[in-house]
Length: 161
Image (cartoon, rainbow, N blue to C red; front, side, top):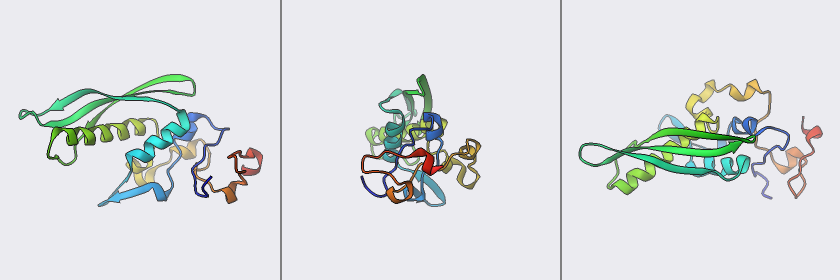
């Protein structure tokens, strides 16, 4: 196990895990805006809830048949409850072809679906993100040294409270 590997606390609900802020090392900047890469969100979602279904439900075209967005759907189980989230994914900057536009619309829609679950929501609220504090739980990132974690990834919860 790598020293800075993100771990899941087995004593928290999946909802509590999803609202935890990402550490700074996973947050990128584009101009004045912060964002978390699609792949980082997907990895965290798989880590917390396991497999999920994600697909494009509808494509949105302008009058010139250029793809300008997509309606996407995320289906998953959170704490044993089946959830469906639908969002619109937009294209920030039009690409050379509809396939590239679709890739951007899918990614944007996925990020929006994740935000509805609280995953990566801190980048939408910047320094005004408070949801994780409501549940009085610590951020999800720890190191082996900080947690006293064994090589197998088991956490002694009582020592870490």
